[in-house]
Image (cartoon, rainbow, N blue to C red; front, side, top):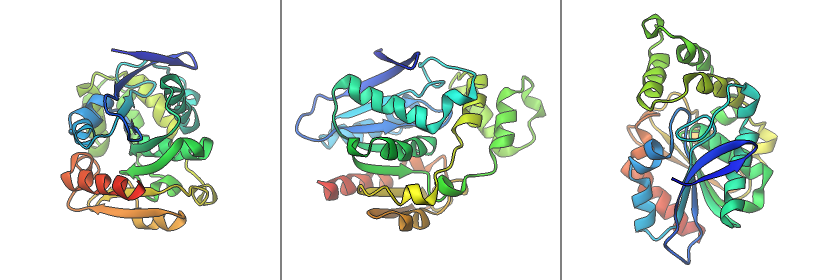
Length: 253
């Protein structure tokens, strides 16, 4: 299991780059997840590599097999985007198609601002106008993660995230710090600076992400895609999402 180091964190990554000739895809997973749960299990790795794309993915700081911190300031999207850029530097990848899901899409957006030349294209999965407007449900999720007594959790969405964190054997206190540090929104003026080809894909039943079409309207070269019948948790593995992303990559080429 390979690791690289950045800002005193040891970050696990995986590298499926046997294919040659195509620009690699960098996958950035969502909150409380990891590269296995977000990308391997839902068959994104197989889908992309079968289509001939080299793929790189990593576990965020505080997630999966990567080392963690319990300091909220260590989890700003700017710092987490710095991890993604550092991985590309470490592997000698000058440019990648960058795809993030949920929090990973937020990180991808900040990466596009910090190092616009590194992204050949962008895909924001599970994140629409919440990038600008935010989402107000994270307080109960934070409290659910840090409590010792799971029976005290009354908010159903917060309980879902707590059970997911327990299922993935996550450091719950690190995730609580991540919630505090990572929920930085991006100003509309910053979003308008993103001019690389972008796909914004949100489930039609996703009540967390905000509108994909409204976010796309702020960007110079973005297309919105509605993942029919899917909520925030189920959209990530949807076959129509995979098919649309592959066609989007063909359009970018």
